Image 1 (cartoon, helix red, strand yellow):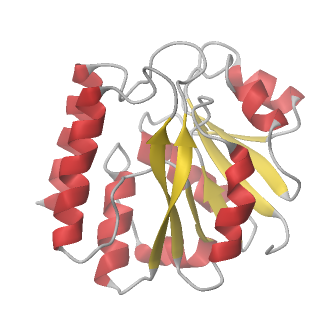
Image 2 (tube, rainbow, N blue to C red):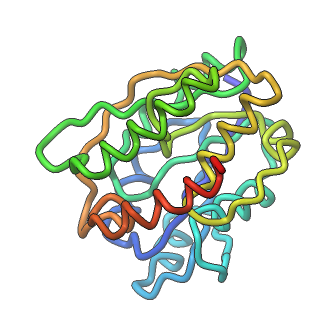
Length: 215
């Protein structure tokens, strides 16, 4: 373990799932919730559960993640969606692998019906295939990542929308980062549809953001 680790949780209306996510955190992980304009009381609930809450008014996954990264104070940081689809219990094992690499990324393995709709899985696979052609050894543009904070800041990622995780991988590959991908359980989210994979429209919007990164 690398001491305390800030877990950055970008949130937009996750009041149903967030309590379960925070309560499931293993020892050594501190929840840092970045509220991206919730109207359901997400930031209030997060604060009541002991999370540090930051606010990012500019809508966008990348905007929320970057605000969390800047606000974090630990040497190593982790990122995870706060919708209950991922298991925080997998984080310690990922952190343990960071001693030999620069980035540990999750490769989602669906568990349960409806965890990963076909359109989202197909789009993800296509983009990951393009990355492998560039020599970046990933099969998933996953929302579960462990990395050293300063190294990530130094990459200079500029995307503030859904293209952020893809730009991270592209820039990491360009500077020769060692990337380790590990299987992680991916479950149906808690309450409501995903803003991205829950609809074809959301998937297309994310694909548009990612395509602009690859141009």
